[in-house]
Structure formats: C-alpha cells, structure tokens
Image 1 (cartoon, rainbow, N blue to C red):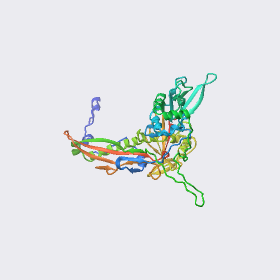
Image 2 (cartoon, rainbow, N blue to C red):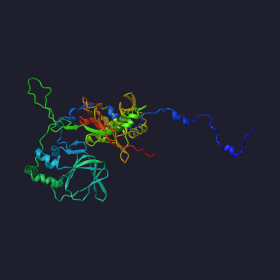
Image 3 (cartoon, rainbow, N blue to C red):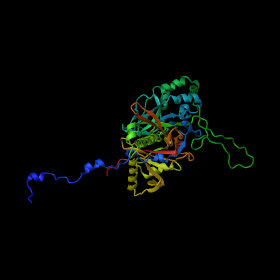
Image 4 (cartoon, rainbow, N blue to C red):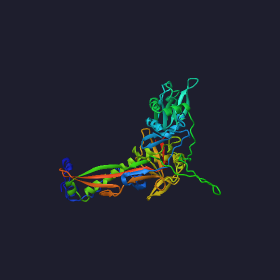
Length: 470
C-alpha cells in the first residue's frame, strides 16, 4: 500500500467516523443549577434578634424618667440621627442654674440647631467674634491657644456633655480665646445669641432669674439618673414609711415599622413555557426575597431613624485605645453592660481583631451558634456583618448587644398575619396582568428595631482595620 506523504496530504483533517459531541448535545438534556446570587450573606443580625409582634405598626418604649441635673454635663435625647437637648439639662449652664420654668427652657432647647462635624474640622477660630454657645452631644474637641512664648498650647479636651462659649450669650463683645478643633467625628448643638435674646425678650421671669443667679435645688436621683424611689430600710417599730411612685418619661420613644418593598414582574410566556426543571416564578421570587432580606439587615444597621449605629446612646459609644481593635477594647465594651449576647463586626474588622490577638499570642475561643463554630471573646460570639460601613480612612465599628424584651435588650419588630403572607412578616400579593401579558407581584416586608434601655447596645467606634506596615 502506498502512503501519501506529501505536505498537502498531512494538512488534511482526519475523516469523522462517529457523531461529534457538539452535535450530540442537540439531543441531550443539560443538568442545570438553580439561579445563583452572590449578594446572599449569612445575615446573622436577622437570625439572632428576637422578633417581637408589633400590632398597630408601632412599638412604644416606656422608660423611667431620666435626667441628671447637677453632674456638670448636659444630656441629650436621640431620635435616630436627630439629637435634642433635654430642656431641664440646660440648668447645667451657669446663667440658667436653678431656673425651673419648663416652658421657657423648652423654648430655648427648641432654638438649638444640630451640627454634624468631622475629624479635623475647625469649629471656632481664636480671635473671631463669639456669638453662640456650643453643646457637645457626641465627639471629642480640643481647644488650643497661643502660649507665653508664641507656641501653640493645649487648653482643654472636651467630650460628650461638655460645652463652650457660655459667655457669648450675654456679652455682645465676646471673642474666642482659643481655637476649637474636632479630634473625632461628632454632633453638637448650637444656640446663637440672637435666638437666646428672642426667648429672653418674651420671658421676663428669665431676665429676673439671670439677674439673681439663684442656686439649683437638690434633685434626688439614683446613680443612673432615674427619679429616685423613696423607701426606708432597717427601721424598727411603727416608723412612718415614705410614699413613693415611679415616674415615667412623658414623651416615650415610639418606633414605627419601616418597609422594604419591590414589584416582581414575570412575562406570562416565561411562566407558562419555561418552567422545567425549575419553576421560573418560584426562582424569581426566591431571589427577590433574598435581596429584600439583605436590604432589611442593611436598614437595621444604617437607617438614620431606627438603625442601631445611629441609635446607640452616646454614653455607650467608646473609642479604641490605639486604633486597631485590641482585646482591651472588647473588654471595655463588655464591661459596660450585663448579659452581652454577641458582637457584630464587618468581616474585615474581624480579621483585624484576629491580627491583634495573634500579635499578643492569644487564640480566641470558638463557640457553637446555630450549629456553626464561630470565634468568641470571653464566651461572647463575634459574628460577621458586611452591612456595617467602612469609611474612606479604613475605619469601622464593632457592635455588642444584649437582646430580648425580658432582658431589656435590643429587639426586632415585625407584624405577622399579613394578607397573602409568604414568610413571617413578608407578603407576596398578586397585582394583576398587564396588557403586555406581564404578571406583577408586590413583595413587602415590614420591620424595625428597638433599644429598650441605653446600655443594651454598645459601639466601639473609629476602629482601624487597615494592616500596619512592618
């Protein structure tokens, strides 16, 4: 037999002797996965919060009346991201000490304007006219001036509850003796001389008080600032027992259920013809609900009205000792509350915690939570949540909380029994078919969160999570 060894013959492809795989696939059925979604996370916050049935769409948190006049600091009321000064707390100002006209104090408090500041921002400049008082709700502000030899000297460092510029309310010629610079982000309330003068002109009793500067009568409170309950102990015989009642806040905080909602649209031809092996409507609905739950957890963390980061009490927010999250910082969080249930931190923050532990030769414990082994500190699990924001400066926050109504902790709010309820607190309602043959479903969930007492939630702020260069 003669074999053609010419170059042209060697370049010819071999003749096909059987059916190719490419052609065979036209007759074969493929094995298909259900639609995948990268956005899905563990959503530990939704899993760990105890959910409380909220009929009527509103949950009211009743607390004992709390204000502490005479401790030198001013206290504020938080309503989400909005901050108000407690009118009675204005009695900490020297010119208002002992003044008890609630109507006038409320009018002054209503004139205070909220101002958010960032780290490094100059609040006031030395030598500039001083025409307003600043009340620090949260944050740290340093005061510097010029020393005897022309160098910059530190005057003071002010923080939550402090104030400066009190003399500016009455002295038209006042100037700032120092420069005030923000060391951390924060919030302050300002009261201008003009607004104070407007209230003063309409309240002659206030003018009389300022002229007299009477002293503040002693107020009886417990160590938490709650109105004291009178009682007697250790007595014998038929001693006269003091009468008592428990006073409440007159305007308690109310949490209305928030909403996350979307309209799912599916063409009837898709729903009718392309349902094997996966049901198109069910898969579309499953992924929509997953996205809705992710948004729900994001709102529980970041919403300015009820989100945990914005509603944590200022006195329960602490700063790190040196920047990175150290075991000492976590201990500081734990010691401020009883019965801490879990930490919540961004995964990158948890990695930074691990680096600090390793640098100290520590190995965190692991505990079982819902069948999963997670790292823990002092027996309190550290759970990941990628909804906690990371700033441009590579800083984040660590939350720790006590949960449950019985423990006066943090609770989730929802209402079940909704029309066409698909999951607890989530409904899927048929909206009809359009003229373009598109089926629409309204997917809705109602939710919120409430902090029953201030120490139920603590936040470690400005946590440096970037890796240090060696």
